[in-house]
Image (tube, rainbow, N blue to C red; front, side, top):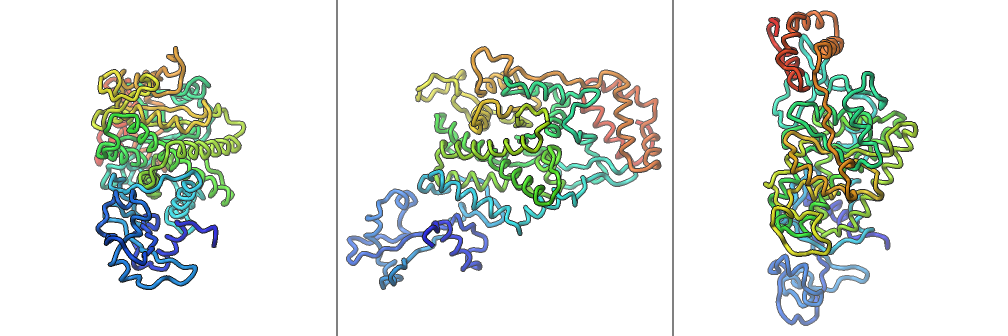
Length: 535
């Protein structure tokens, strides 16, 4: 058909040659239009051309080619047909149909994409991964429909939350993950108010575009962040290679560390990081849109808490890492076609704004302040110079000179956060929430430089530091009562009372008061004990 594209031709070629291209994505096939002149001026075989020549030589130079090619295509093609050479991608650049590969600088750039063509490429990726018969969509449907209950522990004290982090090689089903205990189901403030309620009040203010969760290890930053995401729509990123959620951000950090395009210390390196940040946002926009579509089709409700679990507990829920698959394919496509930042920015802004309006329509009475959260957990990893040094976005306007002085160069945290703000079609659509142990005063300064705020903006980017922790014995007793009430039966509760007797609670508070994590960890370990001696 006249409206068919080159992408459609690639799909048709793969469809008719399934055995030949089983593990190759159709997008990665290289097609060469064969034109044999009657009298070649010189002999050039396709195999002798370098990658640079293939992309830079003029068509007439390539048409002067190839005695070897003319031996294959000796006769002129019939009218209204053409000869095409189909070239498989190299081993380094091939992208299997169902398994993503890490982005690589070896991917040969093609012609820059215009907006409409880029939309077609994104739709092709989206349709492939989330087609009605795809494994990813099937698993999302089962979760959204409620066919799969939240995983809990087994054993004598079963029934407690059970979530597996990425680094866990063997899941121990008797080990509770109390970080996920009693997460709120409603966006309404709790009574008594939680730390997350206080943080959300700050994040929803129109002037708050950046809200770092700043505190010592174990003070409750991650618990606060995921609780905020139970009450407010948002995206969750994690910069650790071992922690919760998708590994797409940590994978892209490795790419940034290894690829030259990110290590030049110039404005283009910043732009390349902006593109990756936009790819991560786009992957989450696509996934959330599909979750909402599924819920609408199934006649069910998909909540903020459900979406948080898809992002943070995808491995435990058996959803696979769709976000990494999406972001890797998008990042590879960006490199392959040298996608312009303006094309990518406009596309993501449009998709993000449409999604945001849809979410507001779903919950018109919710006090979300029209704000979507972008949580970056373990953000201290983005502050490491291991991933290169990048120009400050606050350098003099119009300056193009490379400068490696300490007051100009920044870690990848700065351009990455700045790239997230490229998703904004209008100021105030979302709030970036970085958190992680080890965020120093330097990282806070770099974050401030990356936020689109005006001068005298201290109140707009002031970190949140009010983590209550354990300040009274009654708080610990109330928490133990909550754990006890979550157990499945009276026998389990009696076992729990034996393992954590009343006299042990005072000792627990005396030794571990203050930070959130130590007491929670101690209780979790006691639940797993084989013997019934006290703490």
